[in-house]
Amino acid sequence: MKLLTKELLARFAKLGRQEDSSDPIVVAKFFNPTGAGTWYATEYDPEAKEFFGFVSIFGDWNDEWGSFSLVELENYHGKFGLGIERDLYFDEKRISEVVPSAKL
Image 1 (cartoon, rainbow, N blue to C red):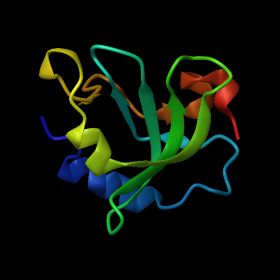
Image 2: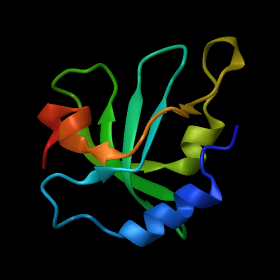
Image 3: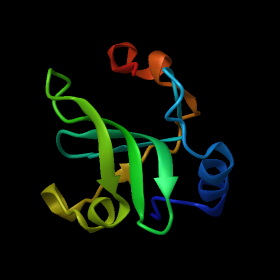
């Protein structure tokens, strides 16, 4: 499965940078189906192939805002050879609705 679709790319482009928002919109959610890790993408730079968003590995004090790479997400292979997946049932929401403690 592709992690990005034309529709998602268009949505990221339309929203642009959300750095001035204290409660940005999460456009896409990625997760590790066989282990820890959830990535909530609020921005995407197609030239660098990098997202910006909130990353939760263990759901604790280590969770943080930052950049993460599309290439790294696509190339990761965990247990049983499964890679990172995009949550197909995720509808975009404000970060406060998804991870209340993550507000900027």
